[in-house]
Image (cartoon, rainbow, N blue to C red; front, side):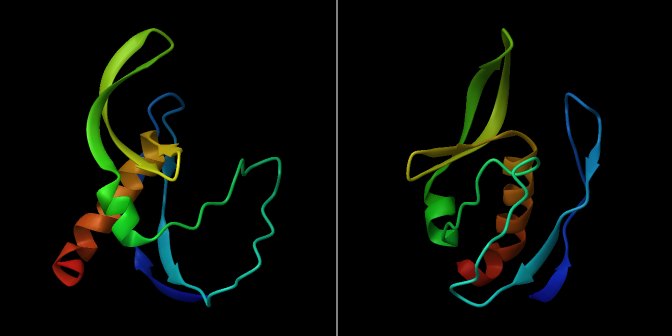
Length: 98
């Protein structure tokens, strides 16, 4: 993995933790070995698909409505802190992606 850089620290809403995301480049065909205790699933999504699947919409969690960035790609719905991290990444890449 080649480290590219850091993104903006992103707070979580419920736990008030901060996530410090980093961006790296890996070779195609990388074999993921996620910890089942920490990772529900690994998604490999293209940047164009993420951009196309972006919406800012109303969600309801635990009976509380709120507006959030949401990415829907191949039936996968990404929201919350992960969506905020992706929005930061895509905003930074926008000048290069067009």
